[in-house]
Image (cartoon, rainbow, N blue to C red):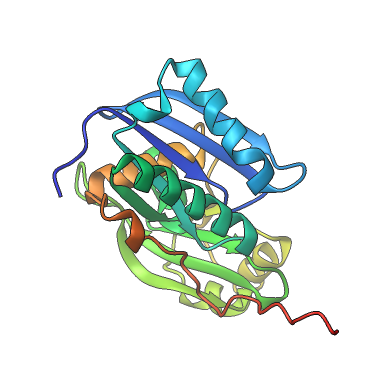
Length: 233
């Protein structure tokens, strides 16, 4: 698909700290970050209208959208993807679904002064961590995958992660403890990113030329989503 030209909106609702970003022809023109206080579905459209108004862009003027496909919270991901799909389908514009872990890695790589492997992590609670490892790509390319995304224990993550890595994303205390226990040397944590995850989504979508049919976008599940049991009658 030909890369879209014009305003592109990115939606990130994978976590309670949500974000939006707007770019025009690769230049970031607006960002909005907020902590979800009630539900994403209740707050998201108002946030979209706010960031578009601040940038002076009409919703009808969007050329494409990008959305965080996960991993992350089930309800937040579904709300973000459904909203992005709805807008894209209504406007007949393409939609890019981008991995949260790859977006985290892209931000960490941008902050690295030397080429090092990146381990991007999402804390899944009792299940352990969702994670993947990436290498520094060629100039202008997206992150290069070294270890495929998976949900494992923190111990397995530490054992499989490349040596001398920069760690980014959600790093629970148990992971830090496992790294110390394994005697890993040369690892370090990435500094907090200076941009929103939504802005990183735009970078990855652009470099991967990931814009496609909005109907094809779906959440990334590294483990089966929870099944809601019917209410007893």
